[in-house]
Length: 206
Image (cartoon, rainbow, N blue to C red; front, side, top):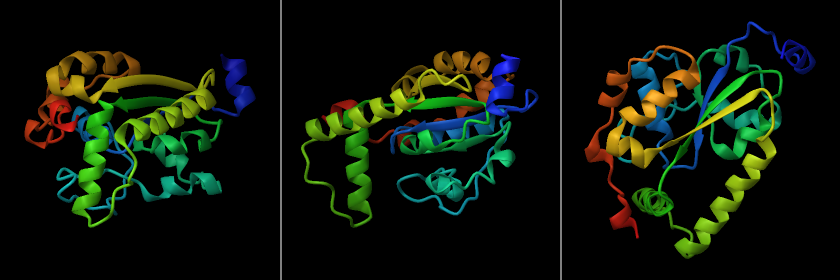
C-alpha cells in the first residue's frame, strides 16, 4: 500500500477527502448537514442559499464545478473534510488524493418527481421525456461513472439509501461510522432529518 501511495504521489499521512455524491435530489444536501451534525468539518462556500426546494441549505462549494478545467488548488483544503460533488464530476478528481465517497441513492421515481417539481417552482420547463426513458438515461450515466472509477485504489465507496434514512436512519449511520473511520455523533445526525421535507414519496411519484 505504501508503494502504491508513493506511485500515485499521495502522502501517506494525508487524510482522505470525504466526497458526498449522487444524482440531484437524491439527498446529498441532507447527508452534508448530517455529517456536520456528526462532527465532520465541511468544505462549503454558502454561495447557493437555502430556498423552498432545500430549506436546510445546499452545502455546495462552487469551485467543484471547475474540476473539468483542472482547478485542483482547493483540494488540500478539503483533506479530512466533506465536500459535495455531483456524480458526473467524479471522474475529474485527481488521483493524488485519497477519497472516501458516500454515494446517495434514492428511489428513481422520487428523484424524477422531485427534479420536475424543482424546475416548475423555478419557472423552468421540465424535459418532455417519459420518466421511464429518463430513468434509463440516468442509470446508464451512473453506470459509466462507476465504471470509470472502479478499481481505483485511492477511492473507497459506500452507498446510502435516502429511503432507508427516512425509515430508520440509525441502520445506515451505524455502517457509515466504521467506513469513515471516526467517531460520529449518530443521534445528532439522525435528529437532522425532518420528515416534513420528504415531499416526493414513492407512492406519490409513480
